Length: 423
Ligand SMILES: [Zn+2]
Image (cartoon, rainbow, N blue to C red; front, side):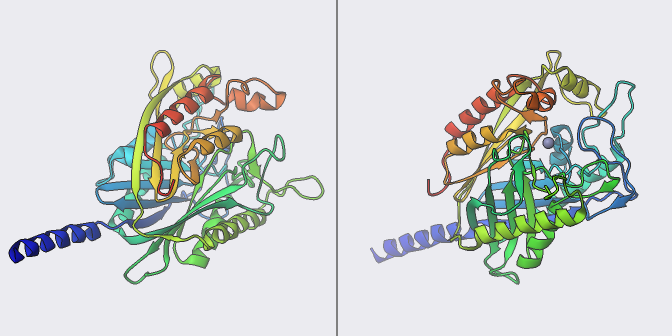
């Protein structure tokens, strides 16, 4: 009998040890991707604008999370958008993380080189394919390094309103989502024990204070946000955009009615958002050994906009489009402790953002905008071609049904998968 009990004890101890041998782990790494010499910058459709100076560096920033056999990489790039045709080349260079678990987002700075391969009617393009090759290499290296850096960690997660003059809706002042989601991974052992390894900030804003027409290459307000968080926490900062379409932008309005379009204004807004994110996360309880779960859904969008058909067909990047102009893309749903993250392959309008956050199975909803693809504006069919104000976002959307399709597919993805911790 005693022998049996001992064997049982040993078995239980082994099981317990196995549990402890698979703690939640996090790793972070970054690369500078500022082009040398400087390159023209793109703020939207068309040929990029030449630059003569630089304010801050452009980055690729990656956070890799692991629980047991599940690994997820969250990647942010300082660019207007980073399409899957480039992202898939990165995914091929990463080892140890399934390609469908690598979420690649763009911060949407309007002062970085063209990553869409825009072509005009005459076949002119300002894209630098060598630069993009180098970015792909840097991004893959950063992800692999972050996976190599994995160390036991706990999480702090919070969502709260960012206060102060940060964002507003340029089309209708108050129609924006002030919620800022924050995920912080804190080391539980080693030299960094008790310190944040990484702080992820999720917020809807257009980093276009400087824009593309001042001859300046810049991460815009994201640069000062990274610097501030890193100075205060010692860990890496990463910014993931949210539902910032039509037209949630930086609040750089001045009392005289003009906009401040300076680096100083980027510093003011970036530091304020960083301080707010750290205030929001400050009192959050630590989540020990949180769950990690990653699902995806491959979908197709029918492209009916003539402008978008032209861009997809003529881009120097050679997008995957069939004869009926259907483009493939991928949605991800990720549970990270109490947070649930849904990706948006473009710029969803804030009303879509509110609706989907309300439908996520979590008390801590996160939306990663411009992630896995960056297919322009995503608006509902009733918003499409409605107000005069929506003329631009209608023209730069794939088509009338894109919002409906995206919402329907996103709801199916949410419905078919488990809830976040604590929901
Ligand atoms: Zn935009």
